[in-house]
Amino acid sequence: MNLKRYLKDFPLLAKAKTLIYLDSAASSLKPAVVIEKIKEYYEQYGVNIFRGIYKISEKATQEYEKTREAVARFINGRPEEVIFTRNTTESLNLLAYSLVYNQLKPGDEIAVSIMEHHANFVPWQQLALKRGARLKIIDIDDNGYLKTPEKSITKKTKVLALTYVSNVLGTINPIKEIIKRAKKINPGTITIIDGAQAVPHLKVDVRDLGCDFLAFSSHKMLGPTGVGILWGRKEALDELSPFNYGGEMIKEVYPDRTIFEDIPYKFEAGTPDIAGVIAFRAAIEYLEKVGMEKIRNHEMELTGYALKRLTEEFKSELKVFGPKNTKDRGGVIAFAFQDFHGHDIAQILADENICVRAGHHCAMPLHQRLGLASSARASFYLYNDENDVEKLIKGLKKVRKILG
Amino acid sequence: MSVNIYKEIILEHWKNPHNYGRIPRPARPSLKLVQGRVLNPSCGDEIEMTVLLSGSRINKFDSGEIKEIKFQGRGCVISRASASLLTDYIKGKDLKKIANLKKEFIIKLLGVPISISRLKCALLPLEALKQIINDKKS
Ligand SMILES: Cc1ncc(COP(=O)(O)O)c(C=O)c1O
Image (tube, rainbow over all chains, first blue to last red; front, side):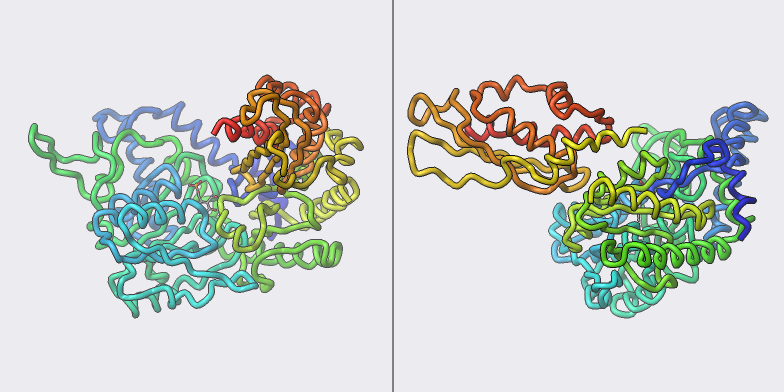
């Protein structure tokens, strides 16, 4: 992959030539086409959608709906199955409260894994507490793989909520297999996939996966902040009741009753982040143009390179978490370096203009499982290359020099 | 560009923190052991402080000298150095002093530029210390 071709598309990288951005798992950088699209909306048709029977409102509505089509195409769903939210977190909470809350009976079970981001853990934990359901937590083995997930599925399992790719271990879970086995044990289990770290980096096909729901965020895949996606299989979405009531989501309102819009509109009450949604299409088209397979291969190679180089340079001083085989992991490398604290590692790297993240990465249960308070994490995207890895290594040597 | 938050003196307090550990329960009734513990939710760090007070009146330690103070827990360079310096400072002083300690004081005590993202680390020990006052009241 010719990186130089992509680097120039990202104004932040083109401008700050010394910036080493290794925090795309938190949020990716945005290419100029996305930023320009936001500007285009505000400058040329920056008005509200749906309600206006005038040209620029119709244009805005069209652009908004084109993103829905692009999202559907991107994950092989149907446009009416795509709901816009604010982020992955909101998509998952929408499911927890609009679908599961009312169906959950005491004694029912919800299965999650220990590697979940809090966004796909806390809503289920709280729901279980409120409704007297049982939260079953799928454990991991020493290499960061899920340990026999089907053992946590029973006839009582109402929901299986799993991340596709771990934002700490990098593990790519065999979601398709797990869903297949779960549905065999209990066909009534609602399968919910947190795709926040998967959709930006892998080719995700919802029909192939066989899941009921998929949640992800625009801002982690070159798009604007403020836009999340909830995809749901049409039959599964029909079971969902609206969460927010108000404008845009109704067909008819009478003093004593309301007839709601069809999906997906009945879930999109109020004025959405119109500019964000519209510009998100530019991000999707950018990714399509580069090609998801190419991105995946690039990240796999780069991760392999990084793992090799980190081991060469630091041996047992530095411990990387998660699978050793790059085929099974995304471009996320969380590590412990001697007994240095993540904050100190990140701070010293920051002084070298290297952006990594330190802390529990919104995965406290996982860190407790690993026996850590926190870790440092470097993560890659299509604009990173070997040079970034070498800079990271140089930075880590400096960490060792200062703290060692 | 400021690696200078990792000045010699800060690193020294991190590597060899003063007053590290935990004070055992005292035998004498004129001494009282109180403690405070706080967690930094952004990174899971925690600090526990134990303080040995000698009060003027038995069982009523509204004021009193901090005879001994120790801290333990896990944290970054900044939070540990801050705990080390703070415990050094407060030892031997009257308990009443704690209430008046402010953010600015800690920053001055550390003597290095603390960015917004590290402020929580720097202030964690002070928070633990302030909890001591609450613990004493309960
Ligand atoms: C696996 C995973 N799930 C969920 C989220 C939450 O995403 P958002 O903050 O966009 O809701 C993240 C983001 O860090 C993530 O990595």
